[in-house]
Image 1 (tube, rainbow, N blue to C red):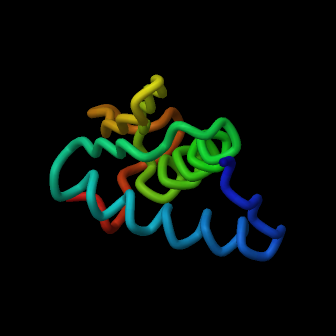
Image 2: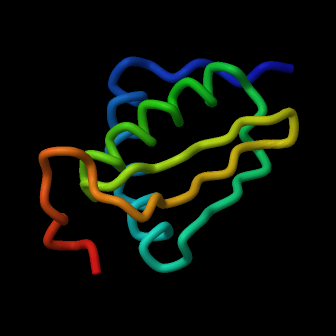
Length: 89
């Protein structure tokens, strides 16, 4: 059974909350693996989270989606034209 789609308000809150969580996890661990991200709609939401997290950290965030979930990694270099974020060590 497919999960119930998020409402626009829920999707907006999801993106903000998960971006903050992903940023912290990436700074602490360098990579994150989520095994329950196999639904295409959820993967699309996480692509938006990756974009927001990259902007938040001012560093590239790499995501790899597969049939068993998604993996996220923090890139080393800063984004062009931007200095390091004050929260980035």
